[in-house]
Amino acid sequence: MADYSFEGKVAIVTGAGHGLGRSHALELARRGAKVVINDLGGSIDGSGGSSEAALKVVEEIKAAGGEAIANGASVSDPAGAQGLIDDALNQLGRLDIVINNAGILRDKSFKNMMLEDFRAVIEVHLMGTMLVTKAAWPVLYEQQYGRIVVTSSASGLWGNFGQTNYSAAKLGIVGFMNTLAKEGAKKNITTNAICPIAGTRMTANLLPKQMADKLTPELVTPMVVYLCTDDAPNGYIMQAGGGRFYRAQMMENQGAKLPENPTVEDVAEKWAQISDMSKAKPGVMM
Image (cartoon, rainbow, N blue to C red; front, side, top):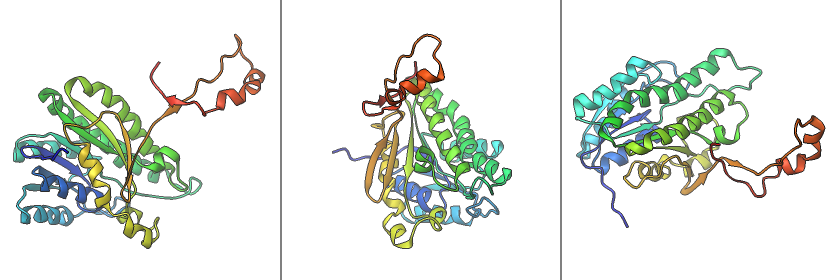
């Protein structure tokens, strides 16, 4: 069985001051990576900011003999995203791994959701993931090596009440990953998505405490770290929670061929065949 080491590699982990990001960063550092700990230090709705959380994780890593630096930029700010990559290059010497984990929540039913609540979540999750990855891409492309992990969610894959903003952002991230995996493949850049289930600050009001206590971030991290190794797949959607690790895929069926110039009545007549997913297979671009 492989014994994975990240000696000589540099990783960026966004949203690494707490929860999942902290767990990922600590494990990468334990295995030899130098890590940029990015965290705006705001509340779960994105308000406020403090460097305290990021600095605390840096001190944890240093106390264990590792090397890390703190970065307090907002991933939704283009200059901040670029500065994050610059910090990795200028202070740690290179960049190999980008884990896009930062996020916020502004849960409300769609009827009660304000436009700003929708935009803010999209800006941090989807645009933040894009901006950090966009800034890192030329570096990874030029060196012909990179491991990118984006954070999606079961809410994005399957939907969840009160999370139209979050679900839209998280499924958007999957689409982003699908195309980036294709564009990076020839340059040995893999891009994969993790859909975690964990008890964190963001899920404190969503999961019963007894359940959250069993869904620790540390039970998600092994999958994320595997997606950062040289053995990583490319273009996979992986789910993890409570020690269970599993894969999700977009599927499509064979459907039905309708007559030329079909009518709505033709669709209705063949609806059972059109909608039958019993023999569905992973979808591919035509």
